[in-house]
Image (tube, rainbow, N blue to C red; front, side, top):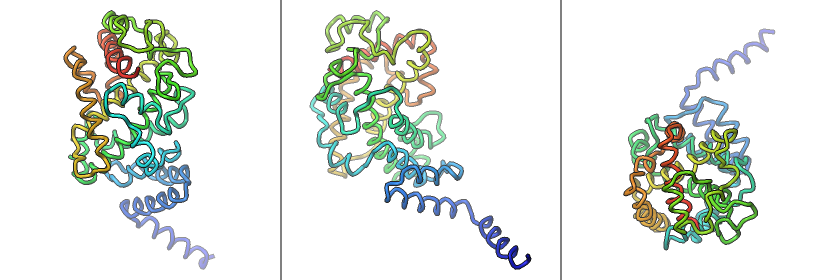
Length: 317
């Protein structure tokens, strides 16, 4: 009995003696091996089996990669296949091209793939402990080099997730034309705000020419309102975090990322009218929870409608 018990106790004491840094590094190594073999769920399970290491940038990046992997994402494919197809000539062409990236196709709200991308994004966005996500806060928390890596990873994942959002709620067809997909909607939402209605009436929304053409899964019906507000905020927060990263990270030293420098120029010029219209505070909202809290206020709810008409209806034609 003693001969059996002694080795067991030695193993137990050795395991207990491991520091959290060593355990985390070993877990990261295991997860990376799984990811190399395409075993995405196994990588997630290994990383989530220990407490979230929110001060370890490498751990967070690998965890985000694991969730994105399970959603079918491959960064090398994204860079090689998708990035060259992004058209930065104008906002409408930019949104259209993003809506038809290789992983953009969506046939249901909150699909498993969309949810995994949301989790991947949140792992990185909520990592710095600051009141709201920002590239500046990540730099303070993780340093310039690591935060730069995290920012680029976030940028890639956010663009892919935005593609899914635009594809489904914009009801696009194979060439990214809004309202021409398999669904019935021609607009993102049904607009009740007079300013948003004026944008639609002025024929600035492309296929969206009626205030009743909104997507069913963004309906303001009482039974669906909380879910609709959450989804509407997801669309805005995606856009805002892309802008925040682009505004606060230096991509000039990497020629392969020149597309994103052009995206920054196009987006910042495009959002200027919305800022001039007094919608700047919403365009600075990078926190999902802050956005959903703001949407409780009727004035902000109307402002969000106005912003959507300017941002997504006018942007995705």
